[in-house]
Image 1 (cartoon, one colour):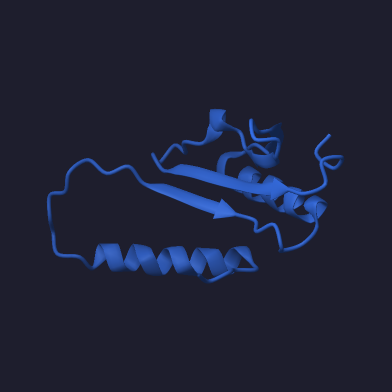
Image 2 (image 1 turned 30 degrees about the horizontal axis):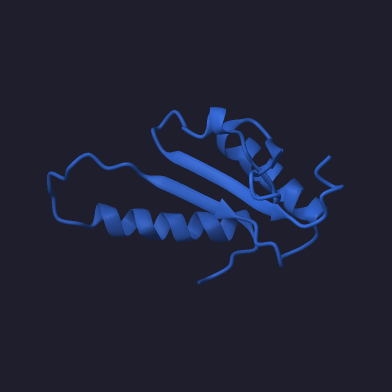
Length: 106
């Protein structure tokens, strides 16, 4: 797995994938659901830094910051609101991170 540290690196990787798809021979494909997942790794920065990253990415991609949520298993995630996960272009986007300091999430 490759880890990225800047929005430009992510954009370059997605452009390269788009170029690969554009270069495919013309084909009729079945209906495709396309999802882009961006996870701020729990070992990459503090909870506050990862929350800020999720908020910045979510705002850039769908116009809304993330939110913290307690999960059924007792962990806390900060993620893009499910209300805004679909972009106008039809892509489903998920931006999220797990939190280790439960006080930061409150």
